[in-house]
Image (cartoon, rainbow, N blue to C red):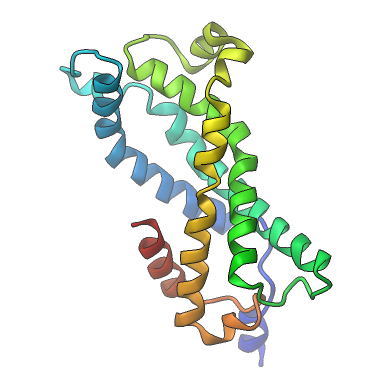
Length: 201
């Protein structure tokens, strides 16, 4: 009985475990993908390819340190948007939402965190382009307006997190049938890992 009660307890919007998992996943993804991203940025800006290992990893500190926090905020915002939309529809907050509501909540959450990801990406690209300064130094150079250049495009890009959530939740509902009718059911960790990896590919 205790095990059943624990498995069906509604998970909080923010949790230390989710934050840690998001931080580790974000850090690994950044370590693997950042050098390739640097090559892409330098090619797009018409600059010579990075010739040293240090140059390949320039601009990585910001994404490395903030990816976990941003992911935790994104998931927390998604859960709050999903519950709010359910309440507006006159449905219980913990009732499994239709898949289009899942997508809408995911898109709204992604658009919200654009306020964080746009400045992060602006500084990253500046550092990757060869500007040798700290994150704070780059932010001061760009100024508030400069940090948010391209913000509408960033909002549009982050809204595609709705597609990720549709795939992720859809797979979880296939793997864990109980989750398909009650979102307070906590799917096993292995199921969440498989759904997350599949949705991210």
